[in-house]
Amino acid sequence: MTIAKIAEQAGVSVPTVSKVLNGRADVAADTRAKVEGIIQEHGYQRRTATTASSPMIDLVFPELSGEWAIQLIRGVEGVLRVAGVELVLSECGDARRPRQDWIESVLNRRPLGVIMVFSDLDPDQRAQLEARRIPFVVVDPIGDEGDDVPSIGSANWNGGRMATLHLRKLEHTRIGMIGGPVETLCSRMRVDGYQDALRSTGIAVDPELIRAGDFSVSGGHREALALLRLPERPTAIFAGSDMQALGVYQAARELGLEIPRDLSVVGYDDLPVAQWVGPTLTTVHQPLHQMAELAARLVLDLARGVTPAALRMDLAVEMRIRQSTAPPVG
Image 1 (cartoon, rainbow, N blue to C red):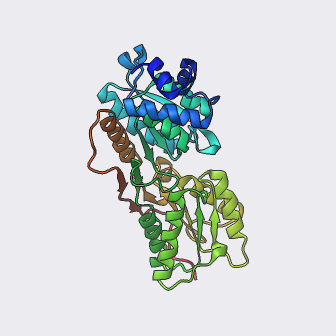
Image 2 (image 1 turned 90 degrees about the vertical axis):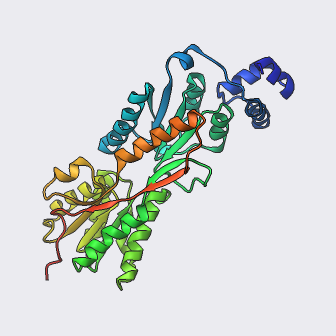
Image 3 (image 1 turned 180 degrees about the horizontal axis):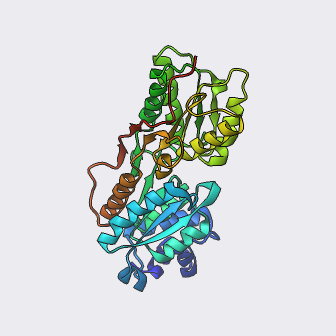
């Protein structure tokens, strides 16, 4: 199957087929769909020197910063280095979906596969990758990707419940929750786990104590100030990420509160910084490095045509109890 034959079968020009192959946006949606269908049906693959000599995997983040991203990069890079595959890093920004120029670049590079971290592809981008037989794997999916989308995550609901039960065992009854963006699945699951732990231990869920952050230090600081300035402030806060927990620490200092005497704090992720701060942070350990390794192995298997035993995996999480939590005073 050649570009000329694809054009003939689709009833379009060769330049139009070339635009579709390169992911260009200036093609009508129905024309693109027709050409994509023919490409996928016949398994057309454009061979290039780059594809033959430099196999690579694209790793895409919303933002390339912080220890959270570094842990995932290290996990992926370790697997790819052993496999002799290069790593290409990209970021898609606040939109959490790659820009169109990214898909054009990917289709030109023809990587072995793509790993999306805490981000997603729109249906058109997925169709373009699938038509070129470029597999993709999602790490920590934003939403419910469906059973046919390969993904690696962790037990977020159980982690949220675990963190809250730890605080309940210390006899806290007024527990604040700072989740992440409401549109993200991992945040919703952590909040759901928090709510279940409260209900199962006889505490009514108070919507006033639940805030939506953005997983950043500044977001944690902002939402913690709002919680701690309530007429009846919480005696404990569960932050949906370690970075947000650092923001809670900052807010507590500004208000003259001592951790854990006046306020217990629990984070999520167990980044190295959790053991650097004082007091050391009680947190939920999320196996980021292992999640990244599994994602890399899964995308390599898919690129080789190997059918995995499971397309979706959620890894177990664990509590790391340190110095930032204690029973409430009085």
